[in-house]
Image (cartoon, rainbow, N blue to C red):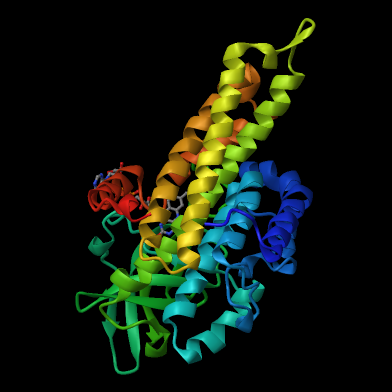
Length: 381
Ligand SMILES: Cc1cc2nc3c(=O)[nH]c(=O)nc-3n(C[C@H](O)[C@H](O)[C@H](O)COP(=O)(O)OP(=O)(O)OC[C@H]3O[C@@H](n4cnc5c(N)ncnc54)[C@H](O)[C@@H]3O)c2cc1C
């Protein structure tokens, strides 16, 4: 594995870093407090082509390789997890169309999705089906040329403003994936507010009441909705979340390095205390480790190694857990100021907690990673 970045990866990372500093940082606290994505930021994301970062250039996307996309996600995730969550759901759900969509679906939706003219959200979770995706109850009754969809989705990131939903339902008990436009008759969108973290991600509960959806909106075959479409989409999302968590760790490290050197006690700064220095060391190690695991996952994805899915899971598991730990330590290092909204670390901690739940909870990932460990995958390195 070559650790040097190629020119395209360097350009992607550096321009995302500039974008995050110039446009995302100034609005991150506002998105969190107002629980909405500022319109101007959405425009900037579209103009910069960030919404199509991981999507193929033939449809107007930026065509980044997994490592470049990961580095971009880290930069944006360092600045604001809500913006990162938009990148995550939009790219992962669009990717499902790249992978499983018909030629007609791709031609109809991908140009708008790559340009960010339309937003797509991922609607799998239901009030009674979270970790157990196979328990979904949303029904897609098959007619001659259409499906009639009824059911409720919950926690749909950017569900409040999405133009399209990638919806998972059951058709005669077989799982099926469908693209449903938000302006179809019978689609009801209810905002979810006052959540702990990623508060600018405009969550929604989306109810489908006998929504008529053309049969041509089906993505992949009936029966493949969960095992292929949802799982491969979640794998993409997990990769993005892993890098987003790495971004939070870096944000905490940056904030703590500044604070520890600026906070004075008489003629000394707190960075001279051994125990504060230990925290800084731990944060540096946390960032380096998470970054290395994410880069390793990217490498496996780029060479098509069959371990890519589980290495991505490992990266997400570790980075999310490490982000929670690092953010909690970062609050402590800031003392009382760590609890204030005048500093970013309390937001980092709230956002990091979310990353341990989405795209597979810590416990669910622990279970699947234990099965992976039992295969002794490291012995193949
Ligand atoms: C901010 C936010 C954004 C989200 N965005 C989206 C989105 O865009 N689209 C979408 O579809 N969903 C989204 N979700 C939902 C998210 O994917 C689910 O919350 C997650 O899958 C967990 O499901 P649950 O909340 O129903 O918890 P449950 O599945 O009920 O789990 C509750 C507890 O039981 C444990 N548990 C469950 N099953 C097992 C098991 N097999 N082994 C061991 N422990 C287990 C869990 O680890 C957890 O601790 C979002 C959630 C949040 C908080």
